[in-house]
Image 1: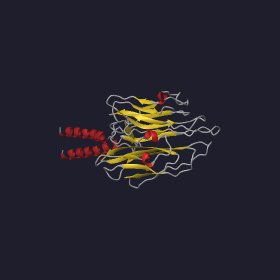
Image 2: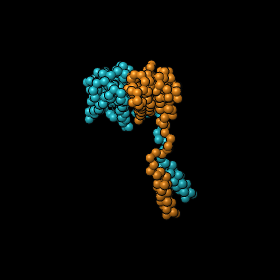
Image 3: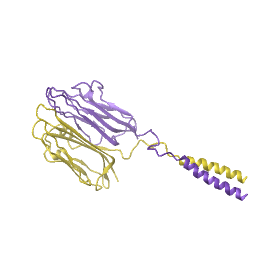
Image 4: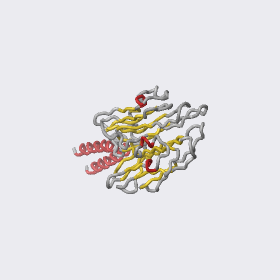
Length: 163
Length: 165
């Protein structure tokens, strides 16, 4: 009798052991993501800025303001850059605030001569595990250099807020 | 009798350990090729093939509409825009605006018109959102709307994504 019980327990343990050791079969349990971007922030008056050369630094600045105690998590930075055929080549940059490392982007363009093809490029950077701001509760800004001479800088920043 | 029981218990313990060990999967990257966050649509401009092969497309033809589903958010995983221009007319400064996305993002679709014999210009915008970009409101459509006159430019827009709570 005791032997039978022990054998039964043994069999159950073997089966359970195998089952418990199975890894889950899904990549994730839900399609909802807490780390999905909840904003794709552009500069103020983006429609004008994204269609007009010679915008000011103030007009081109993107500001992302978190709630108190929250960090800004950035998942992507996207900048459309176009230069017209007037003026000289430029070496504009994009600086930031509240990001550790104070990253800078080069927005330099070479102005094409009349009759040549236009200068167009896009910066498209993604941060697969997101890029967290330095200090919680403080805005992150992306600021183009002072004079965007004969160029259009159209910026978008994707991200979300979190503790 | 005690000895037999002890042996059985020992065998039992070995079986449990071995059973667990045998059941371990090999070192695979993922357990399943199925993903709940995979894009389930790649929506395109209303004009379809016409928009992608014709300059001067209208706003209506160029618009991409992703219909809402009750109670679900639209998660966008990528925006892709093919942007060729012809050699006629003036430099284009078109834009693309959106609805139901926080931040009201705008894309510059500006092109420099190539002079005759200089060759056409071609550009592609390809943006990826690694963790998805969630719409502002659930159950509401997301639209991508080009500006009114897309002078001498063909606009071919695709938006990838999926629906989820």
